[in-house]
Amino acid sequence: AGRVLFQREEAEALTLASNTKLLTTSCALAKLGADHRFKTTIGLVGEELHVFGGGDPNFSGRDHGDDPTAIFKGWAKKLAEAKVAKVGALVLHPDFFDRVDLHPDWIAAKYDQDAWWCAPVGALSLNDNCVDLLYEAGEKAGDPVKVTMRPETKYVTLTNKATTVASTPKPFGFVRKNGTNEIIANGELQVGTKQRTTWV
Image 1 (cartoon, rainbow, N blue to C red):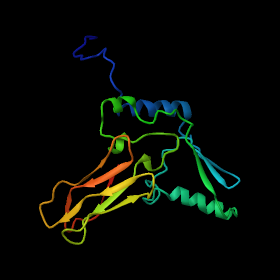
Image 2: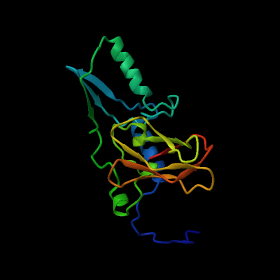
Image 3: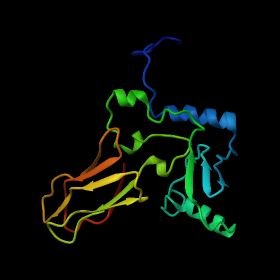
């Protein structure tokens, strides 16, 4: 009947939430079309390999056998087929988008930036700009927890303070210091805990 049944803060400006992705996707389909393909360009300048990001979100292991570096291995194979014997430097160009890689409201609100959904964004992203952390208990009580990082990178520092215990473990988890790429594994895992994965 045109009557308002309920309203709350209807004129208040609110921070955009995840359901905004529905509108973003609709807009992208309308403007770019369903057949649009994101383009990443690579080229050699002397011995420098230049990579120009175009916003492709799929530099990850999702569609590549859980290997986040699979696309790069494909590039390496094509370079080898083209008789490129040596690459002296890798030069990345992520400037297709703006330079706002983390929502300023998230920083102001002091969100825990070690959450996977709080990863920075950009036109050249690898593995959703996260690292996969694979962890499992050591062989016996007193052993450190086994932690591996995928993809392996010097961009991130991993400190393992977690230990294996016989029973009643303290909570286990990872913490990344806000504004840094330092990840710390804390807590305990019980003997026999099989490999699990988380993202930071």
